[in-house]
Amino acid sequence: MKFLQKLKIAERIRKLSVSSETGKKAVMVFLLFLCAFLAGHLGAMLVEHHIAVETAADGNWGLSFQQEGQPPVANATMDYLKQFDAYYAKKTPDKVLYLTFDAGYENGNTAAILDALKKHNAPATFFVVGNYIETAPELVKRMVEEGHIVGNHTYHHPDMSKMSSKEAFEKELMDLESLFEKTTGQPMKKYYRPPQGKYSESNLQMAKDMGYKTFFWSLAYVDWYQDKQPTKEEAFKKLLGRIHPGAVVLLHSTSSTNAQILDELLSKWEEMGYQFKSLDQLVAE
Image 1 (tube, one colour):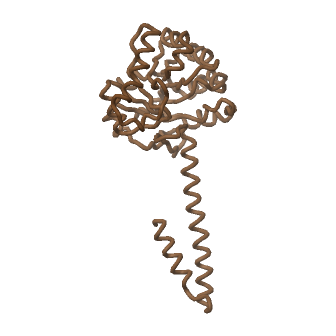
Image 2 (cartoon, rainbow, N blue to C red):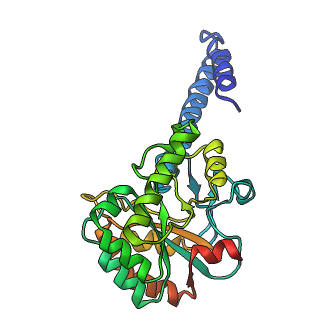
């Protein structure tokens, strides 16, 4: 029932005479109705807030986990995204997952992450920004040398959904492409992740027109606050409990928790029967 409809019903009940016994009963009904209505409405808002927090994005991209071990419900379907060469997971019964890291800056955790990936022979995609390449070129070169994909997270990490200008949109991606090629001597893979998951349909089309594939995610957790890092237990609860076949996992390379637990986390996923594949394999299969 719509919000206004409920209020109208409540108002009709309130207007009944309180002088009669019937009126007194009506008032009681009204109060009970109002309490139930407000509780339900507040509950709905809390659920929405909880889902928003768990998405690890403040923008448009959102996830709702309905069942453990199963893909979440996203706010865009795989079929909708497919028309723009965009992905957030793979529809498959096979226990495979795709590791991705957003790298906005370097704070000393990437080397340990790369060590863990190398130990498990796990390919990953690092979505980097201009600042990262400028300040940590050797780590970017190491990513490439060890067989990882380096993707485009834009040069300045703006809200791309607010960019209606094709020229401005293209410049954010092309400037990063140029810096990457200058640093590594190789062209950048045309894999794009919108900063904060903020996107618009026109953005998706612009990226596609540039030859890019856009990647969101189907599993993430709140790991990006440098001064409020999750505990190992909190991380495992989310990352083990919500893993699912075909998951595109988003982690942040700035997370000290991720650096500390990644070796063990990868081992636990392997024990659960999961294999690690690259985004190249996701789009090719």
